[in-house]
Image (tube, rainbow, N blue to C red; front, top):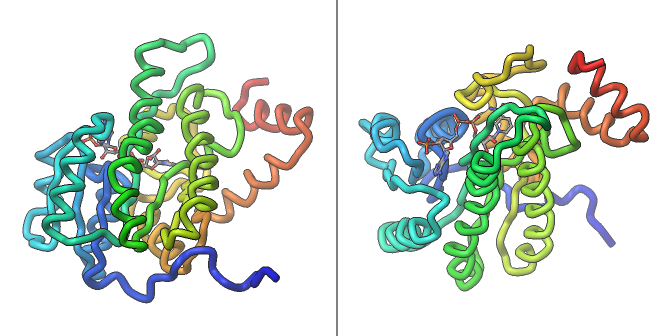
Length: 263
Ligand SMILES: NC(=O)c1ccc[n+]([C@@H]2O[C@H](COP(=O)([O-])OP(=O)(O)OC[C@H]3O[C@@H](n4cnc5c(N)ncnc54)[C@H](OP(=O)(O)O)[C@@H]3O)[C@@H](O)[C@H]2O)c1
């Protein structure tokens, strides 16, 4: 029998001394997660390409390790992971935050941009998993959190490459859960609504239920702490999208077009 009240993932009573690697943490949600985790007493490693921004986040916090890397380089994952293993002797949680986004309509597709976005948003997650999973599985310990998006719930115009990349991450998180749960590894799927960061600064439209990066970080940590599989927020927005995605296509398309002012 299923125990409907039991969390799908491990719960986190507190974050003290937990060893957490945030990849894509030089700005936005990743940087806000780093700051919040430091306050909660965790040991944090932060990775991204921008070394200066990483150093600024770590300044004055000896429990923060800076590991600059390009997440689209599989060798960089292997090196950074080896460094962390040597320093920490293990990992409690890896959060995949890195992403690229460019709003574009279907007629604005550019091959180079497509390749780059898919490389950052999806391929880098596979590279990271290849690097870390053998150790986590051997230790029968550890957790991974994939930051996808409500943009992955359904096809939404302007998210021409970003949306499908996030849908792929949702799919990946689901199958990872099935594969890794029996091996003692927790898998968390993070689906934020709109958050005010460098990424969404490119949006020309009014973003409903917009949150700050600090609010997003707090929601992510609260959801993980409760052991939820899907951590979606703000609920007042994500619940509506979850209902819309259940509608027959005829109604759904009409609603989306009207909401985006496309018809
Ligand atoms: N903002 C939102 O409304 C929203 C909504 C849903 C989901 N999300 C997701 O939340 C996550 C964080 O996004 P954000 O909004 O905080 O955007 P952001 O401020 O632009 O952060 C993106 C991070 O990804 C890093 N990154 C990009 N390419 C990388 C690469 N090749 N290698 C390593 N790091 C790389 C960036 O650092 P460098 O440039 O220094 O490498 C940066 O730290 C993303 O997965 C995004 O899709 C955001």
